[in-house]
Image (cartoon, rainbow, N blue to C red; front, side, top):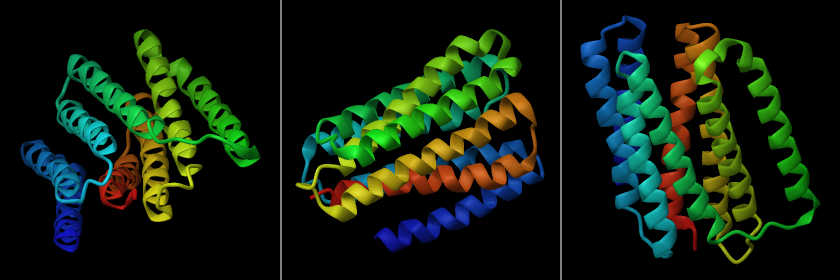
Amino acid sequence: MNSILIAAAVGLLALVLLFERRQRRKLYLPMKTILSLLFIAAALTQPRPLAAYFQFLMAGLVCCLAGDVLLALPGQKAFRIGLVAFLLGHLAYVLAFVRFSSPRGAVFWGATVGVLAVSAFVFRWLEPFLGSMRGAVLAYVAAISTMLIAALALAGNTGLAASGRALALLGAWCFYLSDLFVARHRFVAPAFANRLFGLPLYYLGQFLLAFSVGRIL
């Protein structure tokens, strides 16, 4: 089942990028929605050795699905609501990770400082372009940074399976990096290159998080 989902996702992602490149919005939105539904399906088809982890992660995936649809719609209002949906998604991921986290060691604290430093730099880079969106973007940067730090804390729990911890951490990193391209596209320099790199990173991150459900123990 996992291989079928991955193959379908790769094909749909290629179509999504093609429709984005050609600005065919009527086809872009339904294809992107179906693609996002696949990471929901990926989580649902995994074993669930940790029920709480699955429940919070599923809540996050559903919020991100809503955000995907909203961000694909035109207008500032849809973008703002989509931002809230993604923020709620990150908070759900934080709850999934923190419930089973074990933050310790110099590596964790060093990585945490690194994440905070990068996030502060990114916000300062974006700030001149944000206007009335400054507060919303600041809250979002805080949420995604917290999500990534929580994934680092989860990775420190040696009572969990190494493969599940690795999938969750790599998924969180991919999601974090993909949002840099979203921010650049929305506020700094709109270009297809942002989508070309950002969308594959985003979907890779979501599928890795979904697959972590079955490998966390």
